Length: 354
Image: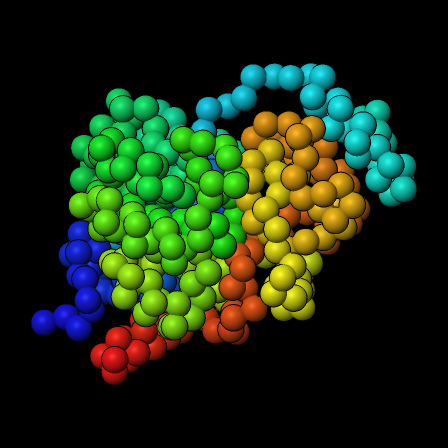
């Protein structure tokens, strides 16, 4: 008999350890997914920044190197309507930085994009049939979701409030990721855009556990075995860990991001919409400090990043997103496999001792 307090996620997803590696677009590729899967956890391949061809290649590589279940993650936002005035106002706000760095302000603004789940991506899932498919910002429209379910995949999605968790359960999720306010990267919020209503992980998890019948996965401020054990004691069936995996050699992070993760203070993360137009938690840098981390002028997701691209090319540390959750100082220099096993083994020792 398993010593884990709740084995529903293990049974549902066919994994050995209740550790899910968060899908971190831009920082995760197949090498991390394979390592986590082969260590007994659930590796998660982010697809939002991949072309269909790139997605197919990554899934092919995963299938060639592990027989374990894995997760593919998609965004399911609605692309925004064009707003030329807002885009120009945003670029005008950044003009002093263009002048300072000698960047051509009058050149066409690059396009920043993150693709929502669509029929083409669904065809790739039908081809590779991953065991788990997860979504961020709600769920795709029903006909697409039905096609995903028809492949046999289990469906996960992120909830940042109890209302979102209940909606996800009612609309077909097999398990729900309870994403606390401390978590790094984009907030999964989709029923409200009110950041003041967001709840911390260890207050949110037991409330969602009480509100839904499906298993709950805790996410946010979980970076060591203590956090895993605490989440499981609050009723979570598993945890999703992101930022701690950014310290592994499999993580594809820039030199500036690598440096910030290892030198910033614990108080130096903030919610920001400057880099994409949607709230996301990252380590403070120059543009966040000088403009303020949240700006009403920033274009809607995912367009805000375009005007920052030329500045980022000149000074990545000052003008790029450095996603991290509030527990980033707990990160250790371990491989993805070692981290997965340490999180699980350490948590189980604490649970058995109590």
